[in-house]
Image (cartoon, rainbow, N blue to C red; front, side):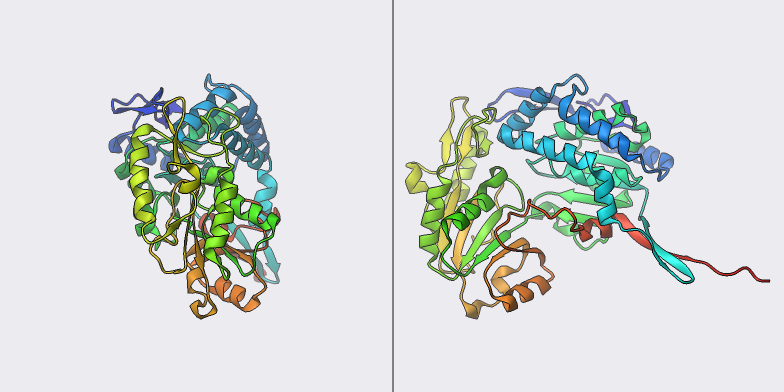
Length: 449
């Protein structure tokens, strides 16, 4: 896998090997040194024309991405490499493939939803126009394919894009680039630059608009910049003020471990007015039913790590569990990590509980299905609900819901039992609009007589 600059493959001498969770060799990844990345950025900026490709091109690319052989790779081989590299169950990778292809096919309607037509008033109009010409996408860490959808949206609006793919999954960006170029995308529109963090930071600094995905310690310094959208730790939460029904308990389990529990919008905290230990017991029992299999098995439901990472995770879980009640490990009979026949380790869901919502482990986000259940009391107010990418509200307290929705550290509020990845299609995504587009006034005056 080589850097791809404006449709041209460049051979780099900086070579790294990418191994699967089972220890198998998956790819040689040639990294773009900073000088090459700088030259690529200059070339992309010089050729950036702001012309938006037609929606039909994205439809053709979606068909190739989902069903075709792209750059000599079949869909099955692509999915196996993603699963083994990221430790992602292949069924989740397959769903990600379908979701991205679906978004590409629907790109026109999605853009019409998020970027409404001009507001016309006497004397002129106000319209949304792209806020720049060059867009950078940087994935510092991540297992899921979905981050690639943001740069696809930028591309559909006329941006020229530079993509620094995630080091665990460079395959999705490569397959997308191949499908787009094969469908007729102008070559200068797409550049793919695997590389180190210094190179990635340079891209973010120099691009007109950028998006960053990664752990909080890697992305937090960029949050103050208006031209950079940051996706760090989600710390998504669920608030429930009653004993859950069987259906609600199933929903809570899906919120924690759906999509293998690797997404930043998977719940990492459940706040309850009831007994947190009782809720955690019921939840742990349900989550223990998730199948632990090698990631290339269609039956797999939980993520997997290589043997070298398993011991570090054991230590981390022991640290997080200090002063908490562990409701999962006793049922597993040896902890959440399970060695699989291929030598990798399945990471089964972990449920901890505490009566103290301020315990330092509450709100900790892992790349695996992990949740803390804590008690909420009216005296605690809205504070335990804040600092959350998604807050799901299973309660009737409209005042508390309004206070949470008004807090600037809460990204979105979901009232009802629906996971964050289940969206109403016609609801726009304001953060993406603010990142990619700018309002522009067009004034009209009568010509002087």
